[in-house]
Amino acid sequence: MLSRAKRNNNMKSLIIAATAGVIVVGVSAITYWHSIENYVKQWDNKIYSRVRIEGIDLSGKSKAEAVQLLNDELRKLADDKKIIVKVQEKKFQLDYKTIKPQYDIETAVNEALKYGKDKGLLDRKRLIKSGPITNINLNFKYDSEELNKFEKSIASKIDKKPKDASINIINQSITINEEQSGAVLNKELLDKSLKEALTGSWNKDISVNGEIKVANAKITKEQLSRIDGVLASFSTDYSTSTEARANNIAIAAKACNGKVVMPGEVFSYNKTLGERTYEKGYMEAPIYKNNEVVDDVGGGICQVSTTLYRAAMRANLKAVERHNHSFKATYSPLGLDATVTWGYLDYKFKNTYDFPIYIEAMTSGRSVSFNIYGSKAGLGSKRYDLVSDAPVVIQAMVNEVNDPTLPEGQIVMDEKPIDGYKVKSYLVTYENGKEIAREAVAYDTYIKKDGVRRIGTKRD
Image 1 (cartoon, one colour):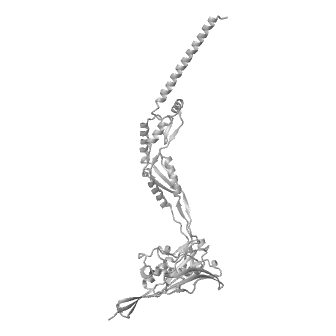
Image 2 (cartoon, helix red, strand yellow; image 1 turned 90 degrees about the vertical axis):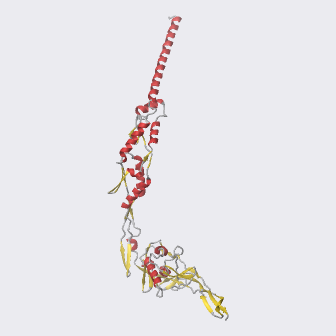
Image 3 (spheres, helix red, strand yellow; image 1 turned 180 degrees about the horizontal axis):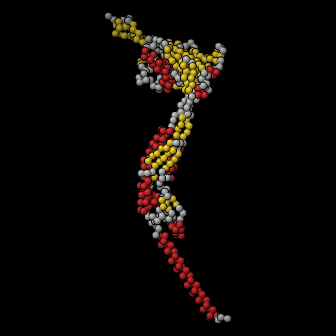
């Protein structure tokens, strides 16, 4: 057996050896760690391996080097890069510089420099040695108005308006021309595609495909084919009118002629004629204005709206807006007229049928006439007419005024009295020649206007 002294010596030797080993390992570890720190530190102001901006490898580049490299690449493509749009067989091209791109290189490079710097020491070493490919996109601004102009330019060369079917009626002979489809560029999709391509393709031409949508006509031959005859007619006479008033009536009738009113659509007389102006050929003629008869541009067109109102009601096309005159119109019974004023009073009716309505208007021999065409089957055996009750008279008064400038007893009528009226109108329905219904349409009031009579009081 070993002596106790000898065993103690051996134990001391083992402890010393172990301690020395630990010291050696520790020193080696510290040395290795310091070498890693020194290695990683050399990359503090450099971009880590395999970090790219818009696909350009910036491994090992300083900030200044990266900025310079990116600026050089931008200059290379500035003059050559194109924006290309293909629409079917057509190709449209815009120089990229036209949209005035401005790249935020500084921000992107700073992001590249920061990449991985927040990791642990060993992770940073691995990223430096062989990190994953990391791509950073460049933020940029461009002139969106220039891009919008390009899109509009393409649309102007692609878009083709559809052509509605049309109908011509001459002497009640009906001819229908077929509709034609149009084409329209899908502008929303093109705009979206271009903007997406702009953010993801900075170093090569941008190419996108445009889409065309079919633009269908609103009025088809099939719809117009249901028009097969006259539903109702009405005429009024203007033989006593001045040449100016007759001229205005002819212009207004021409504006209404040939109008098609589709099912559910509302016809507006004011919209159809537009504002009455000298440029359109209208002349000054008598109208009611502020309860007076004065000459104004377009005088006489209310006779046309009244005539159309009577024809439309006979076709069972009820008014959605209609107004009576302030005083009785010479060309219409009370309660059956329709006055209009630009921007204020209108005559409108709605097509409540399931087929289109065609309006034919004409003037001949100082008479204005309307024919309302549609599907004759829509009326069946019924017919309609607009009538009114006997009016209630609102008696006008005559105010007497003494006039010291007139010889005593002499009478001068300055303003003639005009009676007012209240009258109710009805749409009467007939079937097989017999009245079957009477619907109240309107209750109109025509104002009275008191007269003025001067009586002389001057004595000799």
